[in-house]
Amino acid sequence: MSVAITWYDGSKYTSQASKGNAESGPSSIVQFLIPAGKLLMVDISGLNPPAGAADPVGTSSGTWLPLNATAWNIWAGVPGGPLYLQKEGVPIATKTWTLAADPVYSGSVLGLGQFSDLNICFQNTVMRG
Image (cartoon, rainbow, N blue to C red; front, side, top):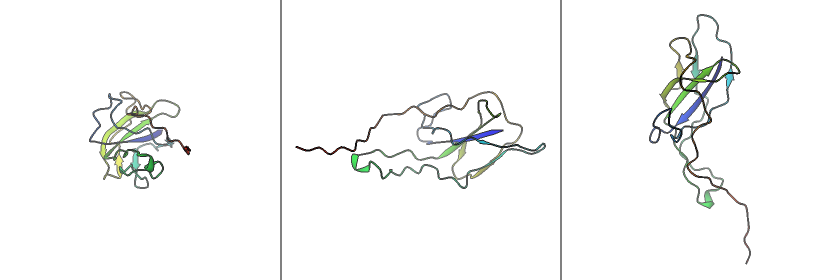
C-alpha cells in the first residue's frame, strides 16, 4: 500500500473539488505492507506542519505569510497507482488516525496541491547608480 498526506488551512479550504483551496502538495509517498486482519494507521507526530510563520529567506523582500495548517488529509492506493482520499479534514491536533476498514480505491485522486495565488521571484541583485 502507498500512503501520503496533505495539509490545508481551514480558513481557506472549501472542498476537494476546488484546486484553489489552500491544500499543500503531497508528502513523500510511503509504501508498506499491511498484514491481513490489520488496519492502516497514520502517525504524523514526527512531522512539522506549516505554522503560518514567514520563511526567513526573502523576508527583507516583503514576502507574504504562508498559510497555517489546521487539518490534514490522508491518501492511499496500490503501489504505482493513484492515491485516493481516505479521510478529509483530520484536525491538526490529532496526531494519529486509523482507517476503519479496507482502503477505498475510488473518488478523489491525489493531485499536485493547490494552484498558486501568485508567483514570487526573489532576485539576488545589487543595483548600482
